[in-house]
Image (cartoon, rainbow, N blue to C red; front, side, top):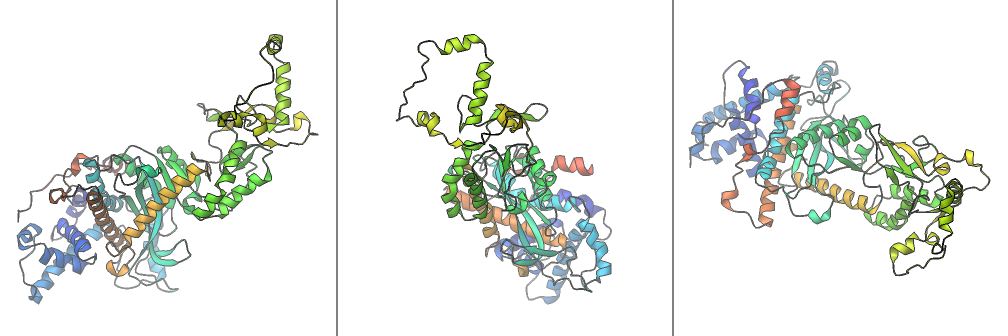
Length: 566
């Protein structure tokens, strides 16, 4: 808890607050972590019992708690009241819209507090977000310091999950005790009243990396359902890149592929990551405005005379969501590769790249009569010595094909697919890619659909399926009986600040369990490895961000005196 930097974040805020200091912040947070581990709960009563009675009498002076008996009712009430007041102090200094949560406010009064959380900014409470992610990333920084993530390639998966709250819904006259909460709609249409949590998990697009590192939660952003999910994911990616500079793929579900380009796709590429997203059936269609005269669909630029059966394969792939059905469509999807305009020249300083006709070049992919006419016309314009050289002995059009060579068989004109353009169309009315061998195309064409791994192909299916399984695995572990992220009765404190902190502590404990499970699987677990240690040696991902955004100095926390040994 010390090395995570949470105490140094809260210290200046609590120092500016009037009144008695009360219990240390460390006492409250450690009690919540102990309750999450020992009692599978983050309720304040369970946390107080753990730190008061289960930690041991030698820890009580360190936590500034009295040595009382469980049967002393008055002493227990006094001690628990101090603990609750300390928690109230923490949530108050982090809350930008503090209000009375003992009653349901009228809708006219609650709209003032709701607007604070719903204002059009990325983060209404940046300090709260930093504190929450410091808790989540504390085990991650320990894993980085000890080399547990050395085999991780920087691939990530992002998803949004429901965080139910212990509060009733909004009514026409009265607002909920959770004024900024709403209905989170899951993939199956199930509605949950509460908040949405954007989660990042470390994963791999290559299945060969499986089991070589712990798949930890790399960040959490709690927000109103359906609000700025793309920007929330980008903010978490910025934090992860400060901690781990190696970048890779970022997989997201249909909600992220449907986000605005300026909110998700463009910032993700600017950070060095490559999106791997699936598409809705309404998105997979011909885009006639992308490049004139070229069939643009699902991020691919195809020949203008691509057969209808190839275009229908894209629609079938978008309509099939099961892995079994998509695997069956894979051979048909691979046939579309022959009609894709290959990259002739990478983008220049203006952001313009050159794309080549699939029937042109030294290794054409298709056979086209228009391309043959274009080649003949180009040959007539060449110098006469080229024609003489072509008629020399040894330049006979006859050639022998080695049928055992797969590459030679595919390169033969009779083995390539044939496109059938109309014969009665004049040359000057043909598309630009048919009049010349190459055309100029903006590198950022179709920014929402363009991907490094072509959509629907074998490489894309492997990467997307692998990365999506990781985030679903994190959701399953976070909502099991040990972490109980979806159990609102285990997180009864009201308010968005309280829900954010308690959810962060639950994910922090889940990361600890993941590290322990990984060490046990690798036969590297022992009692002396139970301590995290060495966290300050890892880079602090929040130092630069805090200095740039708020101007507040966020140095590494200075460790207080060690607690007494048992």
